[in-house]
Amino acid sequence: MTDPISDMLSRIRNATVARHQRVDVPSSKLKIEIARILHNEGYIQGYRELDAKPDVNGGVQKTIRILLKYGPRGERVITGIHRVSRPGRRVYFRRDAVPKVLAGLGTNILTTSQGVMTGREAKRTGIGGEVLCNVW
Image 1 (cartoon, rainbow, N blue to C red):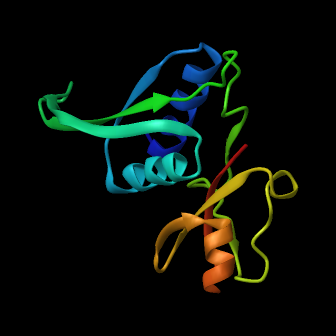
Image 2: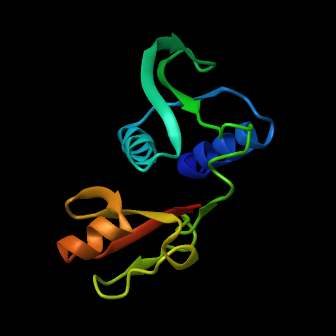
């Protein structure tokens, strides 16, 4: 797999379309930070890191279990999730050029020199960075 972040976002997108209650993704520090932001912004119910399990290559891989969130009538909270910066095309923004998602209704997730944060936090802090994804 060449882009594990895109794999995580695709798993979340596919699970919400299929109305699953949870989705498991292979763990990494960056993916945990993305899940933390999705939880803080109210897009998911929660997440937790599960114990390590043997993977196909004989190694051990931890897993993140993400609990998805739906509205009172079963409508999806995450209606769209889009990978912006990819391994073949990195997308960076300066602190004054961080874009809004759907005129402020969505959230973009950036990786900066001070860690992973939302676009609003980056603008408030006065730093730019690489835009990982947009969520709405």
